[in-house]
Image (tube, rainbow, N blue to C red; front, side):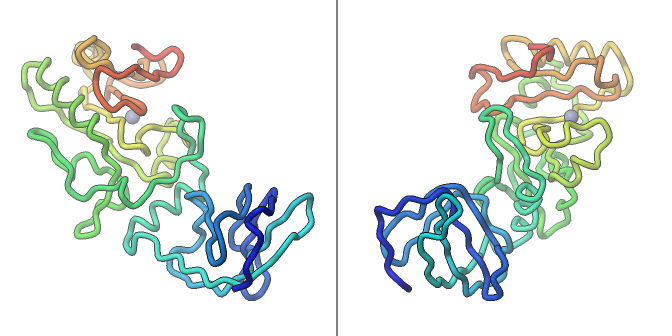
Length: 248
Ligand SMILES: [Zn+2]
């Protein structure tokens, strides 16, 4: 590897493969010393292939320097790599941060559950086939669900949708294609059996001070289910980030 000047500044860094095809690009500068290239999470383009590559620092359209590297995108080593690629490919946006969202390997779980809600019923993705079942399910989802269930007299609650991988979400009718919190593990659809009273009862619990959730208004939903979410919240007492017009 050719050493490069750590003072160098660039607008863009491209990584190309042996044949000159660009396999990754990102805005920013090369950093680190000899033998080190850092770039933002989410630029992984092929998680299993090894590249013998050229790295180019580019400023004002001019290549400032180039050096060969051997890049190995090992990823998570399982089905999570495929799911993460869906986030990359579809440019999923976290409306709380305003940033593109690309999950890390450690954002996924294979077994998170609570007393009354099981992993399998909350993982409604297309990757829910054992033994390779992975999902993003945040703690707040279980905390919130248990709290709603308790306020509702500890009756069993049915789940029609929990975690969705991006491709599934995009293909789900009436979903928020690129921002739905079902892709973030902090949203759930609770079955309400097309019963307006059941819907309203659970709605009132979910938006109350004890639960602090955001609920999709009936005007854009149905009495078939109640969509509740806690976007980016770590606890039920955290500030809410509800969408405009959503009950809160
Ligand atoms: Zn929903």
